[in-house]
Image 1 (tube, rainbow, N blue to C red):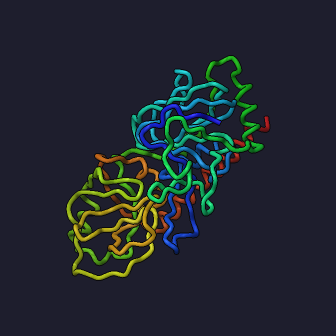
Image 2 (tube, helix red, strand yellow):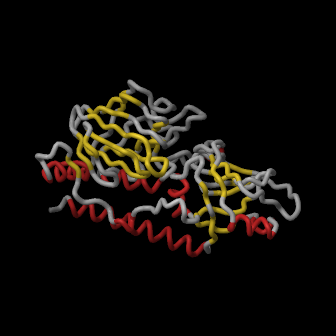
Image 3 (cartoon, rainbow, N blue to C red):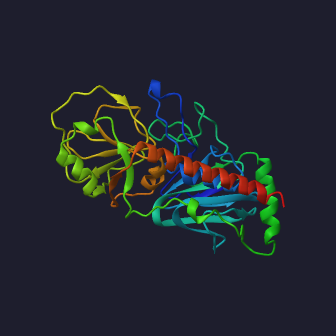
Length: 334
């Protein structure tokens, strides 16, 4: 259990999403940066879908009343326990009475705080994710506030073994964190200078040749009107060869649709279930995390890859996550 001293700018409970209900208009929600969410959970012995705290731009201050494990993954945030800095992307022991402070982001936009046992809140339609617009899921359907008391769940066998392992690793240190971390080649490259990889959307061929060239050649600004539902972009307007009436179609995380003003919108975690605008592209799933770490004022560029390449990149990342799981299990055997 821990108490929220300061909530940060926007701190919500998220898991991997609420699926199976989009046909009746219930949005999926879930962590924006699912890769960081999954790794944070793995590092404390949780299941990948266990609920974490999604921290946006400026983090919270928490006081713990138990000894447990935590991990912070995602964007680069300043984080301390009792004033001592802790490192991201690794397993950290926090003791009863310790205060964790997560400051502002130095790069990226979101971080994920996993606690051993996960965040213990009721599941709504199979998910603990917070959907702020509807006020459902998470902690009473809202962002965390000062004074909230949040429970953690029961520790798994792996969490208990990791807790014992980290505790005995450096018992005399005031802050105990694992000396090992995940391999650098597994970390998502959040470099904003690199173009985001996309595959062609269903209506790609309906756009003018000039618009298609602009889409891949020009930079787009992420506007302040962006949120968890979608990122509104500003750049050279994109246009169709001829005006076309469309029926609404299903959309997913990373769908890039172009409304009548020609300014693209990237749909993200809290996206609507269907969309009636032409879809010029779909972001490769391996780059969802990079989109999640962009913030208003940042710029984004796109580059096309084949669908088969996107699949291979996805499978390579999943294989790396499987290796991380196996490595953590091996740590507890010796």
